[in-house]
Image (cartoon, rainbow over all chains, first blue to last red; front, top):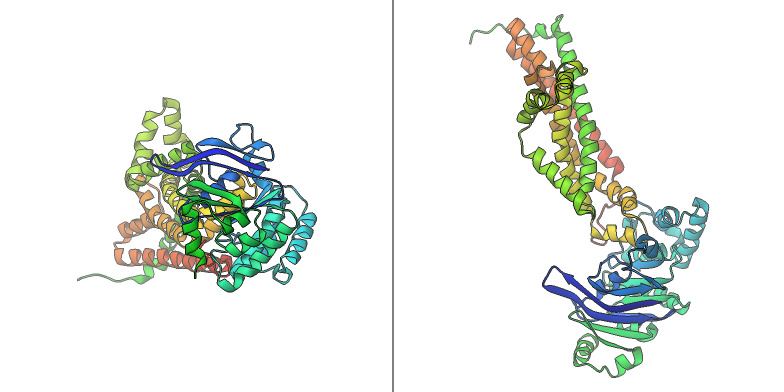
Length: 243
Length: 240
């Protein structure tokens, strides 16, 4: 479904943020990407839908190369959902409009169709009673669930999550993770950058560990947590798990 | 000081009429110049923030050119120099045959100058909305124009209502410079009253009050607009 081949990316001339990253995500797979801060996780996930351009290598999503000149990146992005660390709901639209705008402006759905879909998704993320509120009137956890609904409204073939719980208060993390767990259970293809190792253990098929822009380890999640091969992954795990 | 006060002059024919007529032209110049400044400034502000290097360069060149030449010099350049560098027929048209040459020149000059300032306000507003919002729009498949139309601009304009109000008030006051090329707006009318009656104190007091009344009214209206368009807890959420 998603294949990254020897992806390289530089910021400026000197700083290489992604080094020869190769990765395959099969349909229905859930991949967790973890690693220390500044290791390139967020950049990696943003290259998948072309939000971050790459300097060399290629990324193929559902048979379409994002570097090919003939590729319509806007169209491709509409088929890949993305959830951001800071939610990034549109502040001037209420919750329902946030979920409808992409359907109407990008997919060309009718207002009725879009609002039906929005209502169903809000029910699904358990926010029906907040349909007409503005993002700033919701808690972080609620906002992030709306953001997930906004992504799902496009009926994406895959979902990308960029640290979806990092900006949340601890008591709100689970309400967001629950939605993600249920999505994974339905067979959604997911790439998730997160430090929630409990989630990774429970849901992820594979864990990708990054450090200094490299994919250091790409292992089944049981193997990764049971016996990480690289010293750097061992070090990372001991730091985040032992307390 | 030996001065014969005569406040009644302000209400006497024809001087009261002059003040009102001057005010009318001041408002006409300001509003039309503002239409140019707002429209062009918004387009250039968008240019300066797009992904296209060419559009960004156009925006930057415009701003640096128009912002860095004093408005009075620009006014003289447009009025005295510009027609001379045109082909003869066009130059004659600009100097003489187009409707109200001095007034039109003043409007265009003020508008083009202020566009460079509006551009910078719009740019800073768009930047304040943030990269995250831009990415969120692109991530659901919106094109760059759609992101501007539906996400960046509606939020950017809300943010920059106060500085845009200042820009309008500045244009309103700078419209008085038009008198230097012979446009008889409020300040020119005031001077004319002084020359006819030698009641300069009264005339300029009247002008001061009239200018202030208009600016206070605009400020009051815009404060209302700012409140009405404010979002509940704007941008307080999620550090966006």
